[in-house]
Length: 138
Picture 1: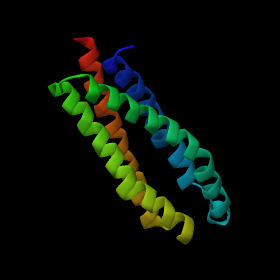
Picture 2: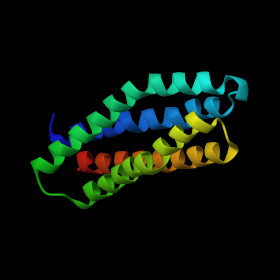
Picture 3: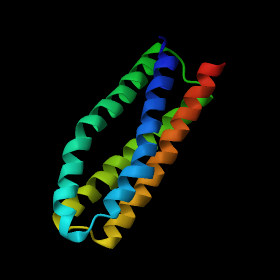
Picture 4: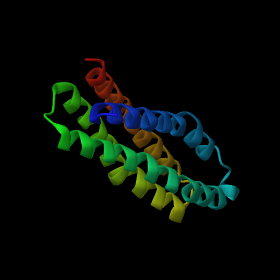
């Protein structure tokens, strides 16, 4: 498998993962009754961490292969922008919001912030996938 194909594969896995979080996981988390919040959120955080490490690690590894392997084309720059948006949104918004939700509980403004950040991550993941798809399709 060459670097663009590795990127397409990792981007596809990441987009599927992100869509699952957006469409299934976070709606269930938001609907958690306050009395169950601490237990459910802690379990979510504990269970999702290894999966996040694998998915994001695979995407990062694919990007290393792409960057070492050759010149960046416009579709690769588009894909890179999607990955940067997703990673930055995770680091600067979603992760700190999860930390606050763990400390402060299911405050509505924090849940809204988490859902908004998650939608941005989905757009970023789909952008990465689209850029990689174009590269491989050439």
